[in-house]
Image (cartoon, helix red, strand yellow):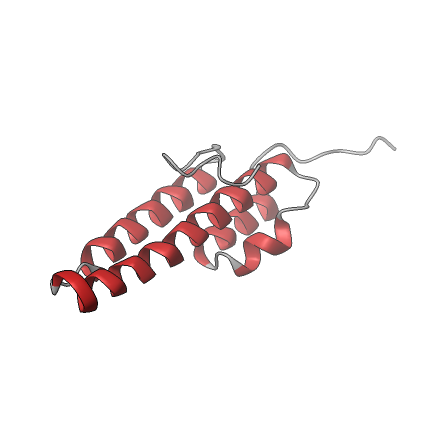
Length: 107
């Protein structure tokens, strides 16, 4: 019998790509070496954004309490949520999407 392959972004692959965006960077590191190009792409993008997000939250903490005195966390958290939701929607639609500016952080 001929072996059938799943098209990019189907079934379990889409579910795993969505989970990579929700639980980044934990699940992203697990699926980065997967053989499916769609899942690998979303895992890398999610991991890239997860790293930048952690650095951004640290910078907001530093700026808020030590320098500026203005709470920047709501703005950064809003940006974090927006990027993750866009990634989720693109993964659910079976599309590849690179996060602007940080998309090529992990090759």
